[in-house]
Length: 243
Ligand code: ADP
Ligand code: MG
Image (cartoon, rainbow, N blue to C red; front, side, top):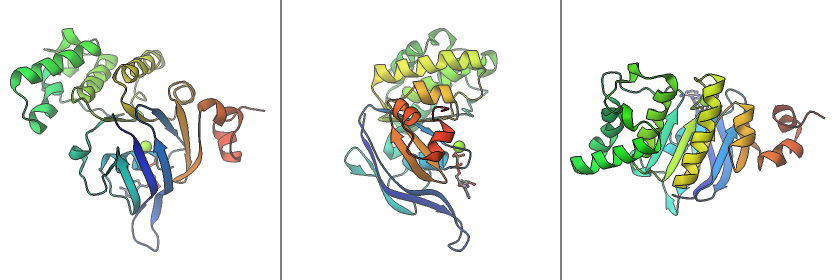
């Protein structure tokens, strides 16, 4: 668990002259254990911001802290962050058990039995304990998503980053996975940054909502604040109450 601080973070792609400013001077303080939802139109910098926190992109300017540690120079692994993406890409030729243990085998020196214990408890938590010997192709979309989440929590990370994790699922499944993710986050108390373009997810899942447009913060507040007291026209149009 960790607090996350972004200090004037800017990320540009390309040369100075015609650079794209994907993230524009974003400052944000996310509390330990908080669940923050990021929304904004396509191209507003949500994914780039996540990737910057994860250490998959290096910001052009500004600082990223996880806990009290300045992580600008740290690679993804050292940041102890678990990520779940829309295309969660399980390894098709590995069993669920192997999919879940692979990362642990590669990046820790835990013993076989310690790894088996951690996989079993993460699988239990995700309700996939009976599927450990199955291959992903034998599972439903919802079960595969559970495996992806199980794989993310098995390492007991400090931070979850989820970038539109449910957008490939049908509406009914999305609804149950919303509840599942909130339950999991509550149980583990892990600081979570969650990107979505789904209005229901934005309004119901998080403690706070962050609204982005053209890489800039438009509003940071509770979902209700953003809905009933939008900071500007953009927020009003994007998520505000139709008045
Ligand atoms: P979102 O996730 O909100 O849709 P992105 O973070 O993917 O937005 O993109 C923000 C902006 O940065 C867009 O204009 C996009 O084209 C640009 N961008 C993202 N990644 C790259 C990249 N690797 N190279 C160049 N431009 C990029
Ligand atoms: Mg994106």
